[in-house]
Length: 402
Image (cartoon, rainbow, N blue to C red):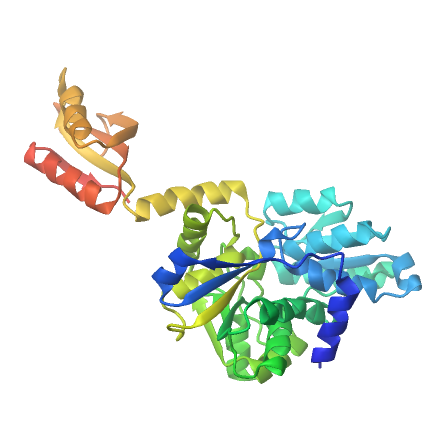
């Protein structure tokens, strides 16, 4: 088992190489969630996630003989970057096995730190098997991403910082994948202040810790896709489950729509970039998934390494959900001036047209008519409803495209 002493030792070991990340109070998210929310900004680490703590602590415990052999690990991205960064800084050769569909931003960043990247398998677990095989074949030291005492102790240093930064803390909300983060944070916090609640958050598609706690053993779940790719782990570790069973009484899940909304909320209201895994805690609190109400809550924003293409999709989809981006399929007479009169109605409502697609052959169009898809920017749901009311009054038939 990992002890509080191990976590204090890890803090001293990594001190000076890992920054103490800030804890930011969010007035807006506090109001929306019904709690006093404080965001622990692990996305501000050099490689963009909390993983640096555990990876560095583990690397610093290696013997000179182990360092000479080189290291290998498997990761969906953040642990990969952390190992690559801190191994290369110490002249240690590093190989990283990553799933084939790992976001390009994480693959590129890992290579930039000097590691050799091997893309293998459809998910983390298949990449893990390949890394373990190569470790045996090439005599490389295997560094587990979460089920390792030194890694867990390193992640637990977040808990020590939180205890100092928020002395009257009631709860900590923590993303959960393989369980290394919640195991370390829970040990640090609960061994110091047993009354503080630890709440784990997982993607609905892969509730591996929830299943393991229920069955009291690690459970291998079927592979599934989620935008919270950093915590898309099918099976938690033996050690992380043991610690979670001791300290964690509440684990809840969020779906991808809720996570996407949280990413957009953090970006727009806090000017803060979080990846899917980093936003799950905020998603759970904004959507009332926990039993926390009126409490001082620290939420770990575990990482900010998100693919920019995915981010663009999330922003656009979020605007649609909020009614700020609306697409209507409108029927109008196919003769000169028809489109001009339609745009006059839209302009009269101060909506901004961003795209028009004109069609005479599809969508079941009658001869003499045309249908157009008009995409518009509005001020929100109320403005969209008012614009659609004016279109009906002007005699236009339309349907909303979602």
